[in-house]
Image (cartoon, rainbow, N blue to C red):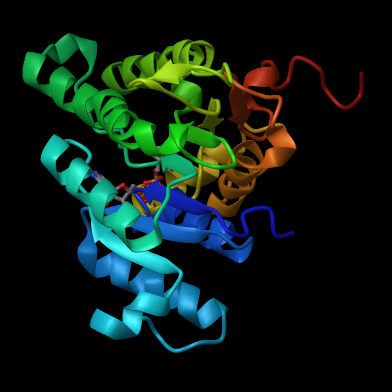
Length: 282
Ligand SMILES: NC(=O)c1ccc[n+]([C@@H]2O[C@H](COP(=O)([O-])OP(=O)(O)OC[C@H]3O[C@@H](n4cnc5c(N)ncnc54)[C@H](O)[C@@H]3O)[C@@H](O)[C@H]2O)c1
């Protein structure tokens, strides 16, 4: 499949896990990909992974990198100037922006019992406001996309059900409603924005269940937790980053051209119902 040939995708959180897998997937389908993250060292590794997957030389700097279809750029989604500068250099590099994937995020935050204003604001600033910043900055370019813009944001099953991590869950739930509102606001093809006509932009969200990334795999304790979590999943496994990347690629592509404003759970069946309520013997 080459659904993204000639298109430019900007992926935040691309240095690790789900963002990295998404960047590799979009590139494998022909996109020119902007790898945006705070972890510059790992971004370089991801750029090399792409080159390796394509059987080419590792991406170098300077003029060597001009021909490459991946562009690593430092981007801190909690800092508007950093986001503006990253989007500007991406558009300067590739001349357009058609797809935005908001992956940067993280779960560490305070629980309600240890209420802490700063902690809640920090989690919201990364997981919700960070996405608002990226969409707001990229929107003029997405509206100008000759193929119609598409935004896919990564929320979580935490945004859809009560499974702990309250500050994180509240921020992710906010992201899902933001998606619905933006889908309605920017769906019309002939919308006038800043004095001119533009194509529509679609907005969708993917809500992953547990996915095997460094969040879980850095120590034995995390691996034990993963094994325990596996038992909760009707499909009897946790997710892999590639499971999420496949769903993102679908929603970002023209295959989903009549889908906007949805949150797609990609969760091995976790949210379908309590496991054990229907046993195989029934
Ligand atoms: N792994 C899971 O089980 C799981 C489940 C549901 C949702 N998610 C969501 O998926 C997304 C990716 O998670 P992951 O598991 O791949 O985590 P990860 O830690 O492997 O990747 C997150 C990436 O975001 C980057 N990042 C962090 N803060 C940033 C900032 N301020 N600006 C730019 N980049 C920043 C990190 O450097 C990293 O590359 C997150 O939004 C997370 O909430 C993960």
